[in-house]
Every structure is written in C-alpha cells, then in structure tokens.
Image (tube, rainbow, N blue to C red; front, side):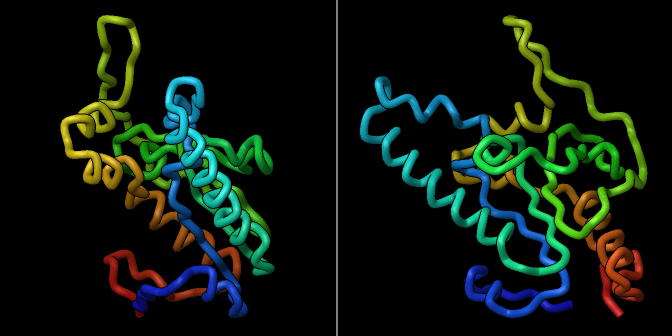
Length: 184
C-alpha cells in the first residue's frame, strides 16, 4: 500500500484512472452556516466566506480533474447549491458501522455504492428542546476544538472499504483488497 503526503492539486496534474477525494469540510458543511452571519460576526464572518470560496475552488479542482472515474466525499453542505446535488447519500450504518452521518458522494464515471452490511445505528441523544443528534456526534462536543473537528470529519471504515473495493471492481482493478487491510 502506498500513501502519499503531497499537495493534492499538484497530484491532480498526473493522469489518474480513479480519484477518491475527501476535501476538508470545515467551510463547506451546513453545520457551520451560523458563522457566516456578517451582522453578528463581522470580519470573522467575512473571513469565513473567503475561506468557503477557497474550499469550493479546492473541491471543484477534483470535480474538474479530468479523471474518468471520480468520487468526491463530503457531508451535506454548500456544494449541493454551489455546484450540484450529490449522486448518492450514504450512512455508515449501511456499511457495518453503527453510526449516523449523512455522507454525500458526487460521482463521475462510477455507479453508486451498494450497502455491504446494514446494521442498526446507535440510539440518538434527545435534548430537552426535542432536538436529537447521534450520540458519537454529541460526545464530540466534550473534546477540544481541534480534536472535535477531527472526530466529526472522519470517514467511517465501512464506507472507505466499500469505496476502495466497489470502485476498483467497477474500473476493472482486481486483487487490490484482501479484506484484512493488507494489499497484494
């Protein structure tokens, strides 16, 4: 298995058969929309808008990379309006991880993922206001901001494995995944 720690935009200049991108969601997700209120947050909101524009350009670099097979993963967010609706929305519990987290997939030259192991998601937390949220997401609020962002942005293993195996099968790459995390 090869892992590259390089500038993704530079790597897009190469000719790839398959690109699976996970651009940062900090400025793209709907959960941060309240921070864009200029009347309330002033310069901080204006700076976040500039950061969002940069994040949209970064996202679109993957969409426009020219690879014949592309999957861009991100939570529900602004790209559904800024670009287009996702081709598929998946949940970790459809792939063996008992959690809820709507994950959008924008696909080019790929078929939607097929659920591999549907399990019951963990119970949701119910607040006095009536609002509910997944327990893992609620628990993240007890973490320092940097750790909280890391936990909330993770891609669950079942979805990641489904992407690797199903998309590689779709493009005719076989023998890549043995199922134990090791590659042949």
